[in-house]
Amino acid sequence: MAAEPCRYPFSWPSATGQPVQFAGLHDEPLVRVTLPSGDTALLITRYDDIRAVLTDPRVSKNRNRPDIARMTEKKVKVFQSQVDMDPPAHTRMRRLIATAFTPGRVDKLRPRIQQITDGLLDEMAAGPQPADLAAALAFPLSIQVICELLGVPPADRDQFTSATAPPWDYMRDLIAHKREEPADDLISALIQVHDEDDGRLSATELLWWSTVLLLAGYETTANQLCSSAVLLLTHPDQLDLLRKDYTRTPLAVEELLRCQVVGTSLSMLRYVTEDIEVGGTTVRAGSSVITALESANHDPAAFSCPADLDIARIGAQQLTFSVGRHFCAGASLARVELQIALESLLRRFPALRLAEAADDLRRHDDAFTQGFVTVPVAW
Ligand code: HEM
Image 1 (cartoon, rainbow, N blue to C red):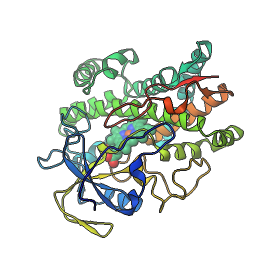
Image 2 (image 1 turned 90 degrees about the vertical axis):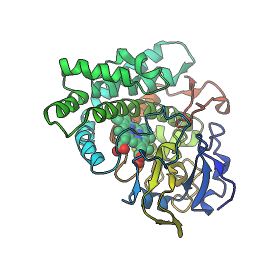
Image 3 (image 1 turned 45 degrees about the vertical axis):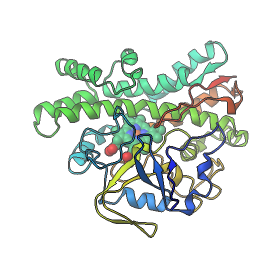
Image 4 (image 1 turned 180 degrees about the horizontal axis):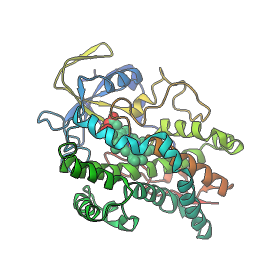
């Protein structure tokens, strides 16, 4: 292991390039890194090790420990969790929300997701060129969908999208309002569990999970949709393949997720509660580790020519939604949104192209999200 820790998150240099740190990264199973907080952690680089660590009960996601590495200097981000993210508290909570996101239930949302997408594409087609795909499609679509599911009024968007800190006050008020006027939505259902079955869901958990569902429910999906579009538009051969046969869309979405040029794995921070082995090295109890999902997705031992976008790729499952007990609760919803939005966008605009040079597209300078700020397109 190199003596000098390198900085994490790595940055994606351009729309088409990869982080320089990827070169030779998988030669070492563990890399010492410095986080934005200044604390250090061990980055786990390889696909198989990451799967093993994320499913190891000796590795905890409960971040309420004094000796765990801090992700950022200020714990303003929702992901430095205020609730216990280990079993049994976490398992109980996941069961409560799992019913809303089963693939079967999410499939029933398809017609509505299609309808919202079509409406947004109509507006985009009638508007001026170039259009910003983030503002015209990606954000309004994912915000509308998660709002309808949770029962958050989309018109309140400015109150929960503009803040740098999680919108706790907004959600507290909304919960109070919904308690008076419950509806057929996920937050009302959680309130009912809290109120009628005292002890199963604490007030803190109710507030925390409602907020996480709202934030996790749109930002990642919107950013992923933008980067998927950019990747396709900068890989004309792959775009052609998809345009020739839209039954490839689900597989293409998986490959676009694998290439994952959106999220960092800073929020994948874990704490080792007992000594474990990673790639033949002992990681001591008390260590903070980061399972670098983007590194797993580019591990040449798991994916041949990992730098290439290959929408017909089959084989190992990408790890962008993580694995194990914290596997993304909204993965099936995100997949359906991405599939519908990408296919509909390409069908509607057969001559869709980036309106700026791909390498001039700016990315968010954020420890958690490195999505594109805007994606100007013309048709
Ligand atoms: C492309 C879009 C998305 C990506 C890439 C993504 C990725 C992730 C990742 C990496 C985690 C962390 C897992 C871990 O710590 O092991 C996560 C957790 C989570 N995601 Fe997503 N997500 C997406 C969309 C969504 C959507 C649409 C929702 C909600 C409807 C959602 C809700 C959640 C929740 C509630 C958790 C916490 C799960 C837990 O700790 O048990 N995500 N997601």
